[in-house]
Image (tube, rainbow, N blue to C red; front, side, top):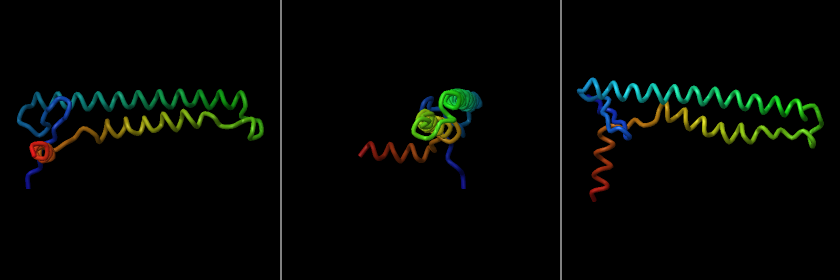
Length: 109
């Protein structure tokens, strides 16, 4: 059984195609996406660590009503974006030629 080649939807490059240059361009694009995600993750961790430190210094030792853990909002909201970015970098943008052909048939109806 032969597997269908992967196609990058943005550049329309076929990863399983015959052209080494096409595979090279797709590989470079994927490496860049993974590196960009790593930078995003480091910035997320650094900024949120500073927010938690700021919270701890200003109100972390007080009883609950006065020391509500407000950094949870940027941690959770931005965390969702980090997860989506990570999924996209490592698992997204991979479509088989079979999936593309099936969708094209649906559109033609």
